Length: 145
Image (cartoon, rainbow, N blue to C red; front, side):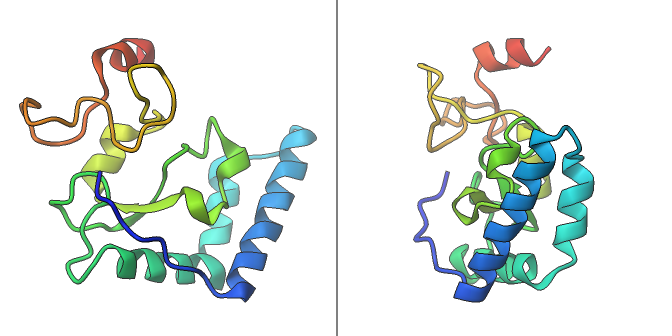
């Protein structure tokens, strides 16, 4: 995973994302949260458009994926996946820029260290990885099935 310096969002966008998170938390508490529908609705708004712009700036001139560093970052990625962890869905500190392939590989999995604590890189992303792309470690691939 690439090391990046997190830029700040405008105060207005940061407040708007906080309000979106409060709405999502309220819907979750009442059993009414549809994560993908909520995310897709919010993506059409200016705060998430600004978030995508800032993420691209954080990724450098070539807008590289935050996981593999090789491919062009195209999507807002949630380090804590939004489906199992909706309490982090609109948190700016949970958003990264990733390429489609890394997003597909990660899916709703969470990059964990061997002790199953949040890691700063995907498990298995080592020189010995045959694809050179991020993958889940064996323990987490087994849990996925």
